[in-house]
Image (cartoon, rainbow, N blue to C red; front, side):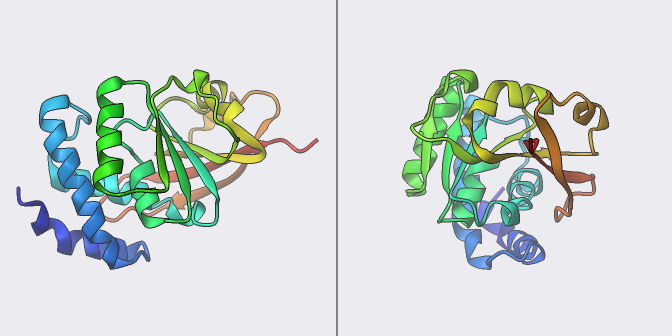
Length: 211
């Protein structure tokens, strides 16, 4: 399918999310690159680019209001750069670390960062638990990676003392919340409306419990 033909649909989705329609051009460049590489390297199970538009781009951007004022974000197990690359495109002031251990996916990420000229993005080809950045992050996120307790076990060490896990989930996962490790608590739950997606979506903010 001609990627450019998706521009009106993407611009309408961006408007619904109160995002600048000018973001459509770099986002479509990213989508074209993802679709091209996906044909060879199987970076995402979704093959249809229109489906990618809603389930990857707009779904990722639905959480942008919660990162727009942050200095740093680590996207754990980012795969082909989701949600990290769309968030970095929409939030130039946010420094994003894309953490991915799979070599093929990390190669794609480096090429995407180069082609899209994303100066605010670094690629860390590393297992999450082995990643040791120079400074901790204001937030970490993970999309379809693992349960909340597992994400914290793998990547909790990456957070600054007041940092938060911003976890994208479908329905609110009561069992995962009940299993949060000691010292962590739910700070907020935000229902999200993703254009073109009928499914329920929530963003959970998990923070260290106040002593």
